[in-house]
Image (cartoon, rainbow, N blue to C red; front, side):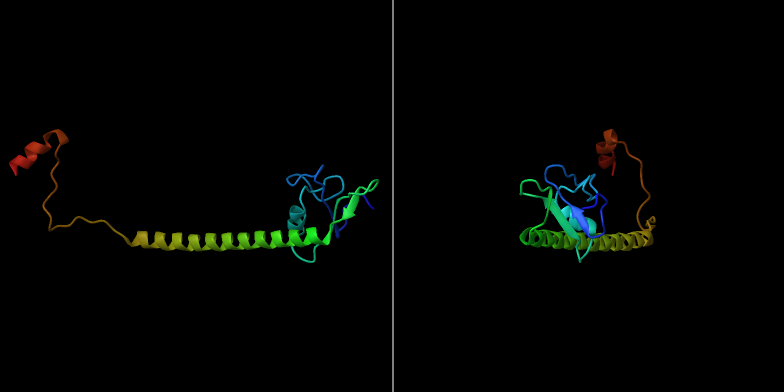
Length: 131
C-alpha cells in the first residue's frame, strides 16, 4: 500500500490513532471509525482500514458489522446535528421577532396619575402618616 492517503482509503487505529490530530493516513490514523466516516462526510464511504488481528499484518479492511454500526452512529450524529441546526435557526428567528416587538414598546408618563414625590426610605412611614 502507498504511504500517501488515496481518495478511497482511511486508516483507523485504536492504539496509535488520534481523532483530534489524525488525518486518516497511515502515519496519522483516526482513533475511531466514526471519526473516519465523519471525515469522509457522505456515502459512498471510502475503504476504511483498521488494526489487523493477524500476525505480521498492520492493516485490515473494517468488518461489515463494524462498518454497519459505524454507519448507524454516523446517521444518529447527522440527525442530532440537523436537529441542533434547526433549533438554532428557530431560536434566532424567535430572538429577532422578540427584538422587533421590544422596539415597538415605548414608556411614557401617564398624565392622569399624580406627580411623583421623592421620599427617603427612612422617612417613608412619616410620609404615609402625612397622607
